Picture 1 (cartoon, rainbow, N blue to C red):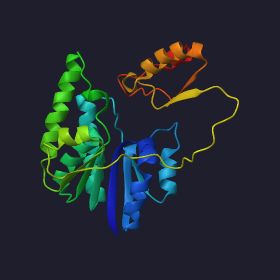
Picture 2: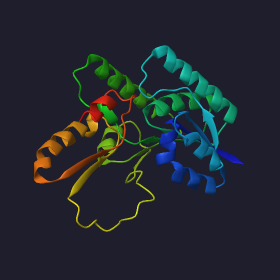
Picture 3: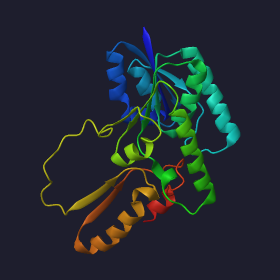
Picture 4: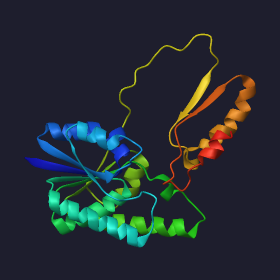
Length: 246
């Protein structure tokens, strides 16, 4: 039986966005293995296993920049990759793309598909010297690994297609990950208009601007809701205490 391995940073990220893709891969005759950081407070790992996929936990943090810790995470993934020997490797987001591609080259993995779902806070202009350095380092590493043989890149918007198309000729743009399981319902009668923000509570997603707009629109009878939670691994995350005090 052929094997496909998905390398993502968070187990809940796989559950929220990658299950349809993994099911499609499995329907093509692949055993699916998921490697990700396991979050004890969530049931994502259990969900992954219930789908018949193999789950392998990996100590990796999205927001970490500690050299020793990152090197250890890459070595651990190399050991996993060497053991699993997948026919197909999916790397989702920057860290998995860089670490996964380097390890795949050592393990001679023949087919690698990299997914960039967005550049996030890292590529937003910042006066912080550390942020600028990390951004330049990531671009340098991406330019190297995406130039390896057997590399394919998938992006979800025209800006990323233009930015990373220079790194590789094997690039495709899709319309996005999408949202499954939602059905439209009629507008409720007799209630005032409500505008809702759904997402992680981070500054770079415009949460502060949404809050400022809410202050203006409150006097006009418009209700504004924030639906989501902070993301401690993101440098622009808002604190839970700040959101509660709003």
